Amino acid sequence: MKLGVVGKGGAGKTTVAALLAEAYVAEGRRVVAIDTDSNPNLGISMGLSLEETEAVPVLPRSMLVGVQGDVTADELIGEYGTDTPVGATLLSAIKVTEAGAGCTCGGHATVRSLLSDALADRADVTLIDMEAGLEHLSRSGGTLAHADVLLVVMEPSRKGVLTAARTLPLAEELGIPFTVGLGNKAKRPDDRRFFEDLCAEHGVPLAGVVPHDDDVVAAGRTGRCLTASSAPAVRAEIDAVIAHLDALTG
Ligand SMILES: Nc1ncnc2c1ncn2[C@@H]1O[C@H](COP(=O)(O)OP(=O)(O)OP(=O)(O)O)[C@@H](O)[C@H]1O
Ligand SMILES: [Mg+2]
Image 1 (cartoon, rainbow, N blue to C red):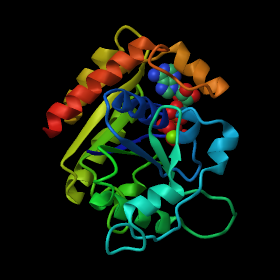
Image 2 (image 1 turned 30 degrees about the vertical axis):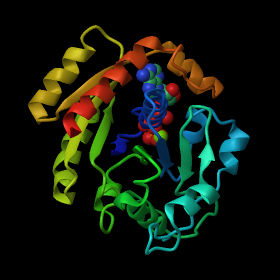
Image 3 (image 1 turned 90 degrees about the vertical axis):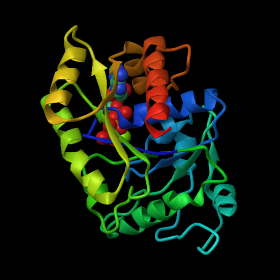
Image 4 (image 1 turned 180 degrees about the horizontal axis):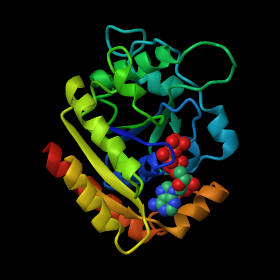
């Protein structure tokens, strides 16, 4: 399963990707999580310290992975993979460290090659934490063209759901089999209903609604990793999302 986590800025993509990684590992699945944000924070959400996150090696741009590529998946994981406290392997694909150094298209090409089954023997689940916006769908070839599922994380706002509605036709055009929305930060009593109604109006299949949780806020402030015992309501919804995606993809 290759799952791209996308959506509007600040909606909770990185948080959801880390929670999914931990939950998949708890089910005994081997998870490789790829941070494609040019401002990479997934390591922190997966329990690494700031120093450890900064030390995660960045994949060379435009590297082709696979038997006929520049490196095999084993070499790639051996050289660039970082074990994280949640039990998943982290790869960092794109990081901007120099001003004016040019676009990050080469990094996106690397991710695209990684998703074309290069990691099939190394991962049961490949999770991709994307940068905000829709550019990953418009880049040459589409960074996520080989993903099985796009999970669009949405805040309880019209713009959040509209991002999912705009993602659907682009993903379909790229040939991505499934795109679903995931409500996040639901706080008001009517937030679930809001997601259900607006998603129905815009034809966005809804995979679940994750509640707003003060433990998630606290973890975001301290850099603490969220575990199964913290934020149990959030984890319960994440487990339900995994069951939903399993049913969807067979
Ligand atoms: N369910 C939740 N409850 C409370 N706070 C949340 C929840 N999900 C995410 N947050 C908070 O929202 C903020 C943004 O989350 P996160 O960094 O995961 O979003 P993002 O979509 O990855 O952002 P970006 O577009 O910058 O990559 C963080 O402070 C995070 O702690
Ligand atoms: Mg993020």
